[in-house]
Structures are given as C-alpha cells and as structure tokens.
Image (cartoon, rainbow, N blue to C red; front, side, top):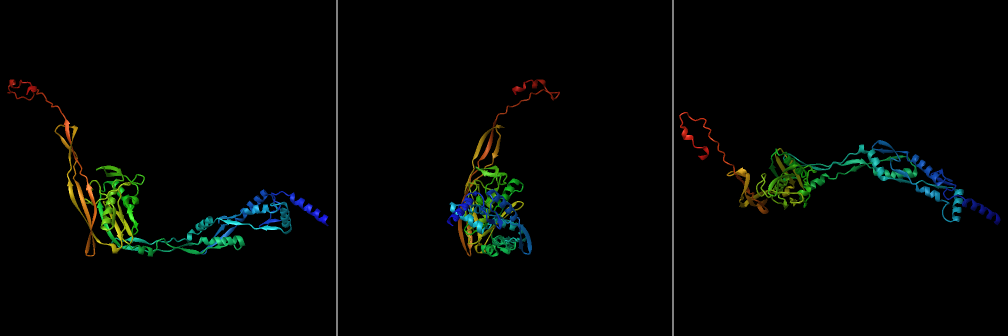
Length: 463
C-alpha cells in the first residue's frame, strides 16, 4: 500500500512540477469563464476582449422623468487587471509542496475568481452633469440696485437646483457588484446662492453717503478714454468694514497693454504726453467723494502743479509704483461705489449705511503765494530787440485744508493733508540776431520836371 501511495505521489509530483509556471492552472474561472491552461498572453488578450464587451453595456439614468442611456465606459467603469496576476499565481508560487497542493485543490474543487471594478468618479460626475445640464436651474445671488433717486433696492436671491450626480456612485457600485437592474435614479438637489438676501441686508448699504463730480474736455478723446477705463475699475466695488482701498491696486498698471492711451500728464512740473494720462482725474474725483462721505484718508499726495478740474488743495495724484491714494472704510457696514462717465463729466458716488451719513464740508485756503521767476534766454533766431514769452509764468501756492463733520449739533474739525504747488518760471526769449540795414539807392525816377538837378547830385550813401 505504501508503495502504491509513493508511486501515486511521484506521478502527481511529476505532473505538477513539470507544468510551466506562466500558465494558469486547470480549474480556474474568472467571472464564470474558464481560463485554465491559458498562458499570460492568452489570458491578457481574453481579458481585454471581455472588458471591452462588458463596459459597452448600457445603464439607464433616470431624473425628473427624463432618461438617458449611457455605457459603463461613459460612466468611468474599468475592470481591475490585478485579478490576472492572482489567476497566474495560483499553484505557481511558493515552495514545491505548496504549489502541488494548490494545483490539486483547484483541479478537484475549482476556483472561481470574481472580477473587480474601478470607477473614475470624476468622469462619472462629469458625464452625468453634461447629460442632465438641461435640468439645471442656476441660483440667483442677491444684489444691490441703485435707483435714479439714489435709493437702494435689494434684488432678492433665488435658490437653484440640479441633478444630484454624486448619488450615482453608490448605485453604480451596487449594479456592478450585485448585478441588479441597470438603472440609476438621480434625485434633484438645491443649489444655494453665494449671496443670500439676508447676506446683502446685513451689509447695511441703504443710502448715499457722498458724491463728487468733475468736468473734462470731451474733445481730448484719449484722455476721456483713460478716465473711462480707470473709473470703470471702481464701478460696483464693495468695501468691507475696516478695509483699506488702494487706487493703484484696484486700477492696476496704466499701460498700453491694459488699454490706456497717451494723454497729458504732469511730470517734473510740466505737462507731457504719457500712456495713461488723465487717470489722476479719477483719483481726484474719488478723493473728494471720500472726503464728503466722511471716510478716513490713509494716503494722499497733491500734484506738483495745480489742476483745472478742482480747487487748490483738493486734488490727489497717483502713479503706478509711486504715489497712491488710499482710504479706509471706517464705518461698521459695507460701502458700495458707483462711477458714471458722461459727455463731459465724471461722477463718483459712495453708498453706505444711514447711521454714518453726516453733513460734511471741505475748506481750503492759501497760506502762501510764491511768485514765479522771469528767466530771460537769448534766442539767435529772433531779431535784436524782439522778445517772445515762450512759457507763461505761474505762481506757486501752499494750501491748507480741513474737513468739518457734523455729528448732531456738534461739529468735528479734522485737518487734511496740506498741498504745495511749485511756481513755474516765465521764460522769455530775447532776440540776439543782428539784421544789416538795407539801403535802396535813389534812381532819380519820379522827379518833378522843375526840380533843380544840382540839388540831388550828392550820392545817396553819404546822407
């Protein structure tokens, strides 16, 4: 008997040990399909074909009474290839005794390996969002509307809705694992607005705090264009309580790339055409609107020369990377800015909460007038004795300013940044060119017949 067992064992050992390790052992099934005795290449080819057929199956998606038929591939389903390695390792791993044992067990009892799946959730969501997009109703954020009389109306928010595509993932897994009915039911879900009616009400914007208007020459088209671009950057700006607003940060670089054109700008005490000329009228108009709204001035610098569109002491120069105009919302509620460019005017309005609306006056006065110098320059192109004013002189000024803010019956006087405007020399060109005197000889023509010829005998050059 022992001899028989020994011979049988030898035969079994010989059979199993002689089989190549790169072949699936007999008795292995994948998803009910027999794959025993297949090489790694044959198994991979079978798997690819099976996967292609499997993921081409369709799933019905139902939402709000509408239905779409989508393939498993559309929904991001793939088969997990790791099962192939598992099939190849059975009976082909470990020491000889273990391999013999596993092969004998598989042949005797069979081994059924289930297929595993992976789902690309991003693809699943994207596919279903695209399919159900016609059912989506976007939310409406609450907003302000400024009426012609400067009253504020709040446009209420509205909740949106869309298909809850995230609900598809667990249903898809159940379809794949349990092979139940190939239908996914999607409920609708609400889409909340980013800004609700209550949010906007809590911002507290309910009245006009202050405004200011400046005028410009509409014939200077480049300058008007620059003013419009810079002013547009502030239109609709919301400023939170305590927030500081930087003009340069809001407007950004004044470059041709940003759309600005060449127009006159004050540089080194003279007007020069540069890209972005005219933007200072926006900063000046904003400065005055901020002053009249009772807000805090953080940074302001006067021009080096007076400008025509505001009184002395009420301008604010800016340059990107240099001078800035900054103010702070020192109220407990939001601010809302509105800018309007008309035919020949720029208006900036600042809206806020009625609790912070006060009567405001801005007062400026000249503390010193600085006379200009007259500079006489020789000009060889002008005749001696001639004088031409090449640059008209302009006085300089030192100007002080303060703001009066009424709070009830009390007035609070607040000093404002002073201003210094440089005098501009008057330049007079003085002619130095010597022009020789031209003498025309008398030819004798035109004499009266009775004139004495001897009276005109003296040569002309000796007169």
